[in-house]
Length: 90
Image (cartoon, rainbow, N blue to C red; front, top):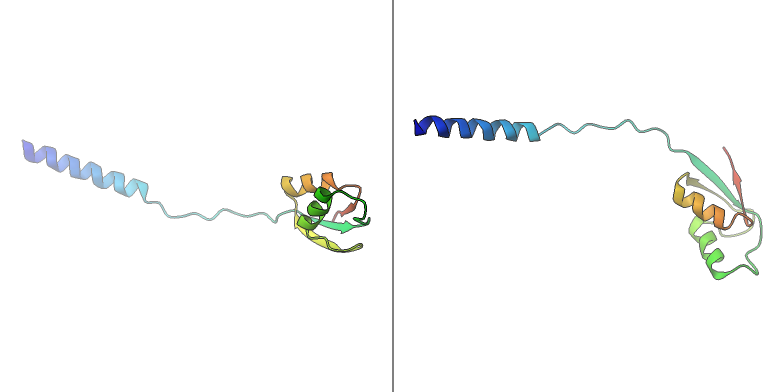
């Protein structure tokens, strides 16, 4: 009788081990939305925080255009310096 208990324990261990191992599945990635940002106003007279935000967006000079992913973080940065940058949809 003890032999049967050992046999059932090993089979349950084997089945749990096979259940946890699954083949990795690839998620279908959609093309991420992009934003084109253009610096249209000078940073002279702006606060240090606004200058750092513009630098964080990757904008260096007036009429400089960069392309960034459309994420809530980038949208928040753009809203803080909306008077300095222009969003080009496309």
